[in-house]
Image (tube, rainbow over all chains, first blue to last red; front, side, top):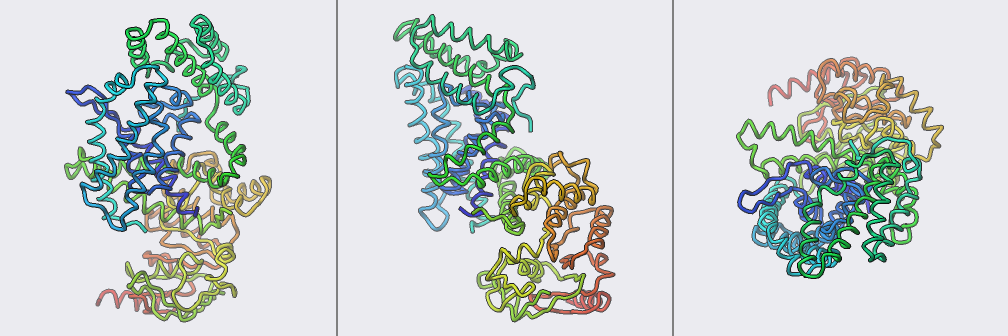
Length: 178
Length: 199
Length: 226
């Protein structure tokens, strides 16, 4: 790992933290608050790549664990990893790795729909595949009940995936990777 | 940066951060072996008493649970309807205990002490390829980047407001991230220029 | 002494510097040139941040391409934007950063840090977060972070571009007080008036290499008529 890897890992850990400061937006019909933070995980994978992005998320979670209030809503400390939905947090690093590996498959920038598929695969499908069974196991409730409780978050996550793609393609055009 | 630490001089404040983490790991694992509701409630009372010992208030304890109260109630209801109410209370009592124990650690331990503890124990991870010096540098750089990125965001937001783009997230995020990437490349040059050698 | 012999530098297929040979011996040397003239790349050549595609750069006889680490010990580098140079969250920690990398003990670090903080009037800020310093203080901290390492040469890339007049004067005084030879890339021609030598670049070549007044005159004339 070279100096640039370390700096990029720190930068994207900071980006995820800063996105936690944005106040959550509550979508009127669904009534579920959307936070910008999980978009940071998607961006880390899409922009920093599998290795740097994945380690950036690990570093972010480490800083949360030691007590910095960096999770959206000013939460932090070890406790957040004991909540019912902690599975999502534990799945974050691998979600960034998946998105990063998919983006790294092509030498050139993917088209909008392809990029959207990548982000959705790692940042939504994979996260839910870990997070929902986790809730079911730790809360000792049936999988179906855990899944129903999570459906309301899907529209917000799709919006975030779309924004991630718009931002990633924009940044990559303004500042090509080197 | 603000952390969640509450200054104090109690037994918990004075305990070594590493030992507190070990206690938490021990308590957290043990609690899953307990399935008797009465014992769990006793554990809850005990951990709440520990908050008093640490000079913290009951409201501090409640603050640890507040973000998840709705979720806990939902779990209780689902459990109660499907299985039994006793099981429901058992499950949420365990959660509450874990959250309170973890909260106690966070409220009585400085972030800098936690980071020092992590850094001095990182050599255990050398066999799996973790370089302690690199992790320390990454932690410091992140803490340095967060305020800078907030300031850059404010600057870009003002500039976009003038152009009527303040509600357009990509129009805000693209210039901020681009500037931060450029800055990262420069910082990486600066680290090299200042003789940083991670080996 | 810094010796540059037959250096070519390219980024992709764009030529930045072409067949450049220079010997730098003076105590204070200024480098001027329009944006994209190759002057920032020139500065980065001097401490091995950028390596030549052809030719060689020798710092006191050490080849930058062969032993970049030894060269970086000799040549301190101050960047245009101090935010990009300050790497640690706290003023004191940032000054300790380079010293720690060099393997100095805590006590040795403390002695050097105390001295440099006093010298640059940053003593009261030693435990402050670096991001709360003013622009001028940040640039002073960046310079202090380089000088605390006691380099044999100091290279600065537009150190005053982001500063107001008052802070430019402060930096200018700090430059005047330096013991070691300095090479400064700048757009601020006033900064160079009492320098020993000024080199003007244009499109990767040397346009003028003379005393400040003569070189700046050639440079200004060329830019006005371009």
